Length: 178
Image (tube, rainbow, N blue to C red):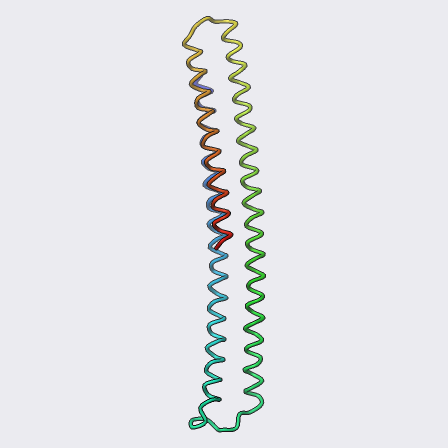
């Protein structure tokens, strides 16, 4: 029975490690996404400020020459085009990162689910085998209570797995809204 306890502890540690790993990966991807969004906002603000400065210089004839050169107007138009194109590019990159995050999170959750389900099925098979063996070999009730305890542990792990699956689904949905 100590072997089963050790295996249950190993299973729990493995699940906890994978949960932490998936969570860290999600947080890293989210940080990259936020950094990219901040960079886009900063560049857009800089370009808009430069456009506004040029428009102000053009509108104030007392400080600047009343004749506006064609090159200044061309520069303002180029800045506006650049600003609009940068905005579209960053939006496309954000969508790409978002889709990549969705796929990676879905794969990680799927892998974790499959691993956990396989381990739980294996444990249930072992418990069933042990139950059959003990019912044949021993009328003792002590071993039966150990088996019931292990079944309870397996059910607890299944419950935790369901909660984790729901949390990951909610986090993925929340990250997509951002």
